[in-house]
Image (cartoon, rainbow, N blue to C red):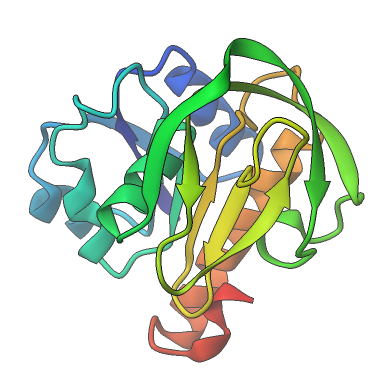
Amino acid sequence: MNVVIVDNGGQFTHLEGRALRDVGVSHEIVDNTADPAEVVERADALVLSGGPSIEDVGRTPEYLESGLPILGICLGHQIIARQLGGAVEGGDHGGYADVKIHVEEDGGLFEGLPESFNAWASHADEVVELPDGFTRTARSEVCEVEAMQHSERPIYGVQFHPEVSQTEHGLDIFRNFVEVARGVHERGPDDPAVSS
């Protein structure tokens, strides 16, 4: 399995690659200006990285029509929300800090994880309205949408950074995403069970 990370200029993008390597899959990192049609040809799943600005996302939104399993992290999460009809606004708690994540849906990314855990996150911008077809899967005291997933498509977003050491169970989140992606390829992308 090859997971392609679309780099939106985030300072932790290389750590996303390390996490994928640690869970046993190959990966590559491409700039967000790369041609999505060419990238998708060699990808089994996609990670949309964090980054400094939602106004500088290159061609990242085009990947949402690829049909591939997608994990959006921080800015990647916000791109998913905004592109698919949700809303993103400035948060009240900018800068990186520890937050307590409260899991509301224990399948998908959070399969086998505790109901709450500590994570490292920035909330300079955050999702304030879910796109149609998405459910909130985690929240915190400072952000109502710490994580979301599509009810039918294998698309996931997290506001926090599972790739950094400060986030508990971060590697488990990557492992769960990879397992979802493997299930998609075994069953086919049109199977309604892919996002569960």
